Amino acid sequence: METYNLLLIDSLNRGIIPYQSDISKAFQTQELNMKPGEELFIRFNGKIYKLNKAIYGLKQAGIIFFNKLSKLLIDEHFEQSVNDPCLYRRVESDGFISRVGVLTDDLIYAMREYERNLLVTNLRKQLDIPTVEIITNKI
Image (cartoon, rainbow, N blue to C red; front, side, top):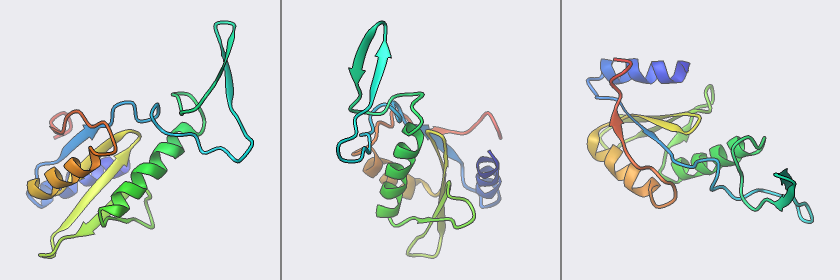
């Protein structure tokens, strides 16, 4: 939550409107990273099911999603913070610093509109991001 608040402050100090987006089904669409020969089963309503994808409540679901999201942001030329792995930054060609924060399955954008729209368009190729909204409840 500290990263979230710092991004809001940073945005407002730089005159940028902060935006956020929720990634739908973030933990339900990720492939399980199983070792060769490993399988994962759950019991539900008296039946046993083999899992092929992560589900909410599965210990690995959060880290599987975070690793995928991290790779996508790095592919977009963002650098992950050494001090806070949920914070990413990219220096634009004119020296402007764009920042993205990750809070569970939400993204917080402290960046200009053009760069944000381009990033969201590219992320939507891999993730379900239905909306990008102005953060109004914390301002």
